[in-house]
Amino acid sequence: MNFRQLPWFDYGGRFAPLKAAVFMGLFVPAIWTAASYALDRLGARPLTESIHQIGDWTIRFIFIALVISPARVALQWPKLLELRRMIGVAACLYGLTHLSLYIVDEAFSLPLVVSEIILRIYLTIGFTALTGLIVLAWTSTDGWQRRLGARRWQKLHRIVYLIGTLAVIHYFLQSKLDEWEPTVMAGIFVWLMGCRLVSWRLGRGKLPLWTVASLSLGAGVLTALCEAGYYWFSLGAPFDLVLQANLTLDTGVRPAMVVFVSTFAIAVLGAIRAMFWPNKARKPKPA
Figure (tube, one colour):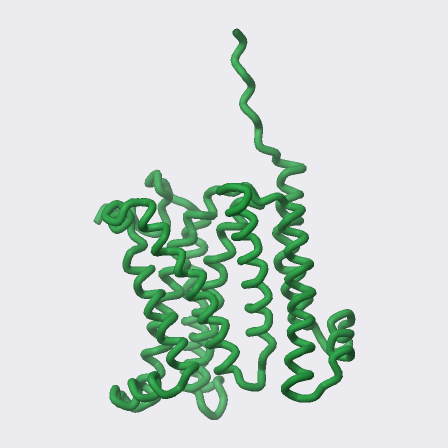
């Protein structure tokens, strides 16, 4: 392997500080969890907490990888695309670690693990998503892209949206009582799908900033409505009171606010970039 193919080099073989920083950052959650385990800071069931933390970061990395495409267009920052493969592979490795820790927690009883995956629907969904991640990570290389051809490779890698859907469902089902972060992920996923649909309708590489901002507002409102509906249906909480809680900080930062602010920030940064660092159009050559 040519050393210039290592993750901290760009496609031109030059050292890329951004890629190097992101590459090192991908290890931080795992190191943090391992150190917390070693220092006995993960509560009464440290292995179970380790499983949850690594699993949470698997889903977070999936979503960070998904956000890169709309962010690249909105920010007019093509080099962001070079980070997507690295983050996607990291998501797969974290997912495999998540599964491995679960096997350890079950005392290495593979028959028990298999039966649990088959019988528990949230584990079935999670394992299906992990299988998809493995396929995408395995075929993420330039060599596989050449073997499959660009069109077939792109079709295969669109299953990442199905993986994202399964990851959100798995997150909701395994979280049980704490639905805050799964709700945030669901709202961001709605925004991502909206961006994907708009980009598909307008043409690849086209995503107006006003559309990004509008989708942020829509995703935030839908998140608030869904959260209010969930608490009304499952706990009998007044629908209107839960909905009103999204308009204040009295009960803390609600998922709808996180969804709106985090996605709207991409539109704001895109506007700032267009204002201060606009793309210089090529001047036509004189006749």
